[in-house]
Amino acid sequence: MNLADEKLLEEVIGKQEKKADAYNLRKNGEGILRKNSPYIQIVPKEDGKGIDVYVKENTLFGIVHIPVLLTQSGLTDVVYNDFHIGKNANVIILAGCAIHNGKHQNSQHDGIHRFFVEEGAKVKYVEKHYGEGKGTGKKILNPVTEITLEKNASMTMDSTQIKGVDETIRKTNAMVKENATLVVTEKILTNQKQKAITSFSVSLEGENSSAKVTSRSVATEESYQEFISNIVGNNKSYAHVECDAIIKDQASVKAIPEIYAKHVDANLIHEAAIGKIAGEQLMKLMSLGLSEKEAEETIIQGFLK
Image (tube, rainbow, N blue to C red; front, side):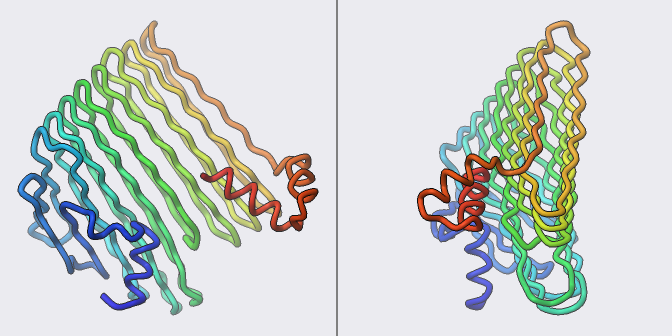
């Protein structure tokens, strides 16, 4: 770890590394730092391509950090991380990847994360993605999140693509069982010729299962975004999906919603809105002394909060 690494790390988990009960730091395809606690164990997979995180049942307010740094141009890193959350545990997991690519080959990280959340357990999962570097090589991130929520379990997932990611395909698949709840909030910013595709597939299997998916995105310059959602209600259940996007310049955004009720008591709602920044919002801020560019940036940052 050098000073540049520490700055990258701060982009995805902030200045919170000392607050973690357990952590695993991966850099350029290898685990370089690891810490366990009596109630949270991180075990590397035998092939070195990931970890298993075991949170004991009844764990209260456990904190786990699993950031990834990629600073080697031309490297494609694929990692498989499995999270085993014990019955009635309550845990916060901070993840994410920061890429610095200052050269001319593409750098890519594909993180496949699987969550097995036992009965009554609660998980808050925070994932941030960030790219930087003046080289012509692309910064590519392809996260996959697979979630199984058992009876009365809940998971909140906050996913943010901060900036600097040239290409991303983001997939989230979830199975939600009886009285379990999934809440997902996604925020994405693209510019230049960047491309971001997001896909959510949620199966509401159990009685009184529920899901809420909220996507906020801003596409500028010549960037492209695509939002795909597929929510299936196989039982008495509730789901609300909301996709809101701001576009400007020559950017484009596509929303592809699908809701499928397979039970008479499945209540599924989808809302989508795509448009430019409202003129009255700009005028109001400009009347306070902001330039048009400053006003636009203020609106965008507020929209993505």
